[in-house]
Image (cartoon, rainbow, N blue to C red; front, side, top):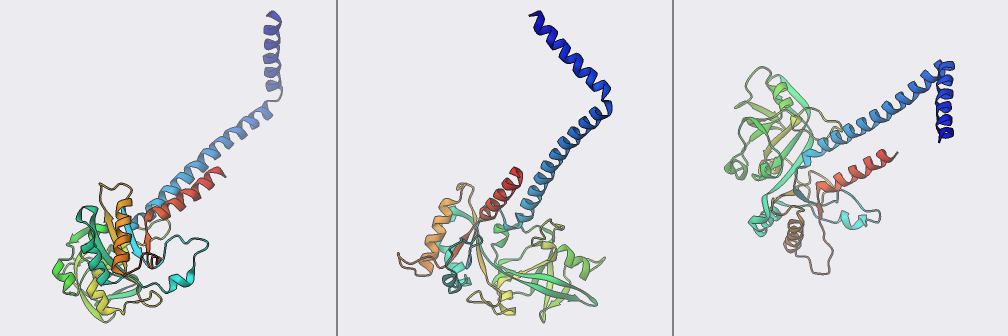
Length: 300
């Protein structure tokens, strides 16, 4: 017992003597360990912040939304590309049929939308370039976040009647109408005149440069179709997509996804043994890839 205490005391005494005789080396060692610990903590903080920023950048895809398009967002390694090239793109007729077939309790809204980038808008002597022009149906505000800060959203009559009205992003409003109220003002793009009925809430830039409504202009879908020749194959011209907002009573949206798949097969007249000629996409596909990516970064 006494021998053990004596050995312990002598060990502490020896260690203390070593620290006193090598003070500089001790300080440098402690400093190195401290810096290392804080560096590891800083790296984890940066990774967490980066992941949060990336997820925020992807929020434009919406929450509880399932999309129908020609191409899958996450292709498989053995994807038969030749089959996908022959797929048709969603149409306005299919949108109307899908809206009728889906049970009302399964969703909060169905929409068709299409966009074209690289547009220039002009109002008097002012202009703004590299903007997106997006044609949307009336239910688009139920599928995607459309935060109108000034003015109002489209009426059903404006959508169906292909009226030349528009909701513009904050960047477009600031450049075309500096210091003035944009509501009721006209601008020109693609040889057509449009009247501003609303201004979207400013979103600012995001980390990945993902689509932002700041440089986006929403117009009725039928108006868009009268300006651009929509692609029927998805190989040339703007290609429409369908979006369906899921119900809160279907947490995983599995019921809605199955119903949408069956509805689209019926609409396109596919036989039981025929493969789907459309892709059902969900934001969770991208979220899953992000999670896997940052899991690998976290392990590294």
